Amino acid sequence: MTKQKTYTCFEKTPLVLESGKTLASITLAYHSYGKLNSDKSNVILVCHALTGDANALEWWNSFIGPNKAIDTSRYFVICINAIGGCKGSTGPASINPKTKKAYGKTFPVITIGDIVKSHKALIDHLGIQTIQMVIGGSMGGMMALEWAVHYPDLVKSCVPIAATARVSPLAIAFDAVGRDAVSVAGPDKGLAVARKLGHITYLSEQSMDQKFGRNLQDKDSYGYDFGVDFQIESYLNHQGEKFVTHFDANSYLYLTKAVSYFDLAQKYGSLERAFAAITAKFLVISITSDWLYTPKQSKEIVRSLMKLNKDVTYVEVDSYYGHDAFLIENDALFDIIKVFLETQT
Amino acid sequence: MSFMKKEYYQKIMDLIPEKSRVLDLGCGNGDLLKTLISKKNCYGYGVDMDFHNIKGCIKRGISVFQGNINEGLQEFRDKSFDVVLLSQTLQEVYDPVYVLLEMLRVGKKGIVTFPNFGHWHVRMNMIFKGFSPKTKSLPYEWYNTPNIRVVTIKDFRHLCKQKKITICDEIPLSKNTLFPWKIPLSFSNLLSQQGLFVLEKR
Image 1 (tube, chains in turn yellow, brown):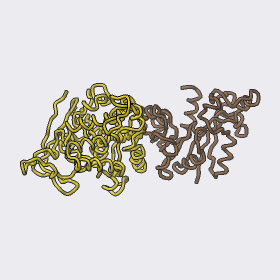
Image 2: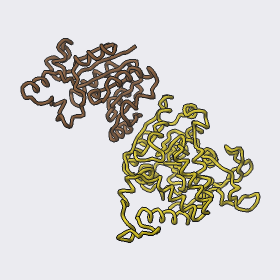
Image 3: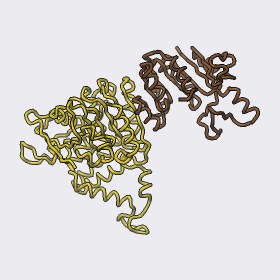
Image 4: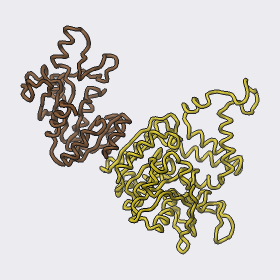
């Protein structure tokens, strides 16, 4: 177990956000594993997903560690919590230094670009001038893309997994309804509903069928009422209830909004323009059964990079687990990331 | 590496100039590209459908696109590669005409190799045994063969003429050491186990 560290930045000059608003005195929570070598050239930046945290060793245990795909005996692995979240970095539940009260909904709306920009301050603080690899799944993949686009001289290779360069209307729709649930039903009940809805999009028809089928929960026949009949209902309830105990409803609003806004083509005029200055070697990985950020969307990234003659490899991991496969599908991902990383140095 | 494979690699190597940009469609584990990169200072890119092949490519440090050949070709600009290779894959392609025309759009030159179903051994098998072609280099049954296009060297020449594809070079390949390099083109459909064509389309 490593201890979570913090670094406070933007104390004198605030961070100017993409919205034009500013955010001052930002605390970043982060974990690091392994040792930074003398020339600081062995850095791997791991970016977490929507509701993840900086303790990557916890949620990506099968990938990070000594002799694992991301080998902590060779690399200095760092993971920073997203601002706007509630896992240690500044977010809506943090105290606004001006008012001495929690930001709540006065927290400015942020973007994926803003999150990355804020994290860059810590990278600078640590004196890191080369990131060997930036890697992440889902929202973490979007952050990885933003790193490679925004800091082309810093990033040597970029591995977005189950991600997209332009969040689709389908994904925006689910996130919007999730936020509606929070506004209508409040931070507890609403957030639980939002989580349940979100969780459906992380699974697939086949994975649900395989795991739950139409099995009934603690009963042999239908209840003919509106209580829980099916295992899938009970599972989702459990996920919702568990989630509200450790996640701030406002953070959910801010982070899903950041994801909804994510569109590199819109931000730079086109994907080709966004990727024009990229020097990083790309490994784009999609999951065959991911219907939230589909293989088609990953291929869009790949095609734009191909058009520009950038160095890009595209891999489709054959899995029925849906979007969540990036946390589950260990063997295939492990192998690919390991061999990719081995050719990097 | 088997003699045939070594010889086959050498043939292809000889046809590709130093420092060429090479696109290999159906690149397998990237072995050929790796050889081209290390021996001829080429830039190489691969396309393959199989996950394990993709892993092999990454291991060899070769950038690769996992997908079918049609998908892998679409985004490349006209003449953006010096050479596009289609090695031992033509016979597995659903729409070979599209693939041929696309590879010659993307590449200044195309190199196509395929097992020749016109080889005498295949013909003898057919005539005397009455079974569908099955040889050492085509070891499949009719129901499980990935080779969905039964093509001979003659067929291929015919198609090139039809589609106004220029055959710059044609090299018969045979394991038969009696005719190591010297199979006359007029007999190559009968005597070559493999067809190797260098193509261009202006």
